[in-house]
Image 1 (cartoon, rainbow, N blue to C red):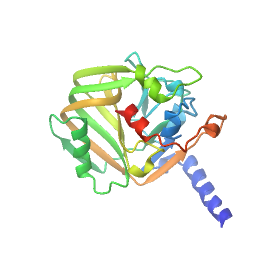
Image 2 (cartoon, rainbow, N blue to C red):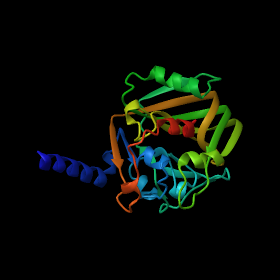
Image 3 (cartoon, one colour):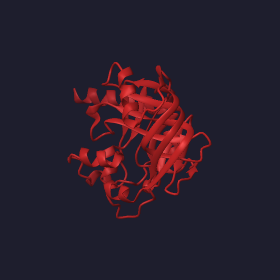
Image 4 (cartoon, rainbow, N blue to C red):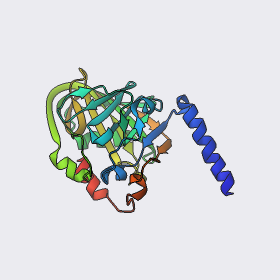
Length: 257
């Protein structure tokens, strides 16, 4: 029975890795959110390889150097100086999630929605809240508040300590794209339960992890994903030694909001 199970997992992994085009409706994730919260910031997968699995997504970079936005097959890096960069394909990520985006549903967004009201509007349109949803919102925002963090040095501090010194950016009347995911509650410790969204402006000059917003006009596209593929770090001892048995949900909530 064990050999049979191992064979299935191995065959699936080989098929997935050799055929990234087959990953429709699949969220591919590098490492876990709790590992990132605990301070595992060394990159393990290159941006070039990440793009083999998806053209839309979010994450961060080696040493936690900025916020990642993957949009239309391009990786963007919003650093702590507020500027947007296009990193080399060899730059690695310690945590990211991507998918091959194909809209299943679209929602016309009302004017004047704040972050919580935006979440409620999307929730109201979702019939199966136990699936993963990739989100892509294009529009104009009367207000957008984002953050980024600088590269960290070893020994790495926990993420909650890093975000105490985060760079915060506030924008008015800005057009751009929001990307991210709505994850079901049972992913606690693996990803962020609920919404995790990043923003990039149309001129690719500003962006970051979203802390607050207000909509003006916009369309929200949703991609239902019923498959989840997790790639865990295998090199080095950091992931082997980190204690992932702790409940970091309260810490994560403070970091995200």
